[in-house]
Image (tube, helix red, strand yellow):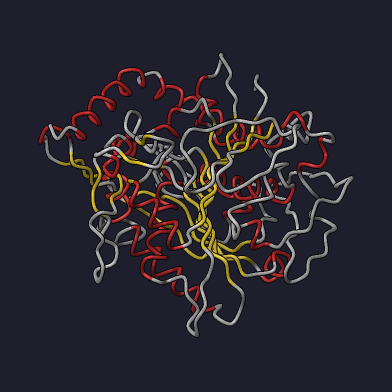
Length: 461
């Protein structure tokens, strides 16, 4: 990638006008002070990621991982100690971003690789019997994609069927169920290393045409996840909501909605490990990050992140190249429920600016103290942002590519990124990149249409 990477953090509740500061100058960081951290300013590039092979972890400490066969350098200067709760956002990542803590960087990369496994395992060959499903069984998946040492066991595959209302009253687009990702739980050894039993849900991003259609359905709809308290003012993008909640009883491998599959499996795993320290980590790329955020809100709203004898299980969402999901009320409710969201976004990635290209969290005046009349009908990002800045003129699709995100995070630690584990994986990733590139060609008119639709929606036309 041609440009240097940057890290920007916008704390929840902060003014939406981002002021950027160089990390080399003394700066007092507060919840209202967005910070930009230039990765090129790291004195010793080896400090950005740490070794897990020889780390000894106690119950309250976090050990840096190795994922997907990547060799990671040891620290030359020990960073400030932090607990796994802090790395997972207990304090909204304050003090871990300027400079970027190596454990946080390693954790971001680790979960990014666990999301990348979804793309490597997804079958896009129309001639295959497993078309639009995972190519491998649950027990073999990590080994088959070159991540045998991931430290997790897959417990369930997740499927969804988009049911999207077409514009101008043209009916509905109903698609058959397809594989969206997986639920996994940390092994005993990984749980000992992490200091808790991590329940992971990993979602892939947009691949098929019906999923792209769901992405462009920018109308807001009430989530209404809790029947006892539906909160009609909490609204989310209708296409993502449909993908999350639509039932499909004709699927080859599963029945029921994506939502019901996930709530059932996570509840089962929480009950199974109720006598251990548990974390719930939801990670996704592009559309998958939207599903991860909807799931995080759903679990917290229903109180399913609670131990049977009391106490709250932390929920953390790692969003890679994710779009906006809901309105300002949705953002505020996620903050109230304690759902922690770390958004990794490339400033040149158009997906991260949608929906709400025109009307979004910036629809405020006087430094965010007052809201315009339509502010609650506008989209708003949730959580803390890690902003990267990269672009390659000859490969426009790279701005949204998950592997490009991961490589950019690693760039400050390795002069030459480690190659994929096999030639087959390289070919699969290159094929995925070409498909995404072809979709980007039509974005010029699509962005104009989205802006026009949002304007009509806000004006009530």
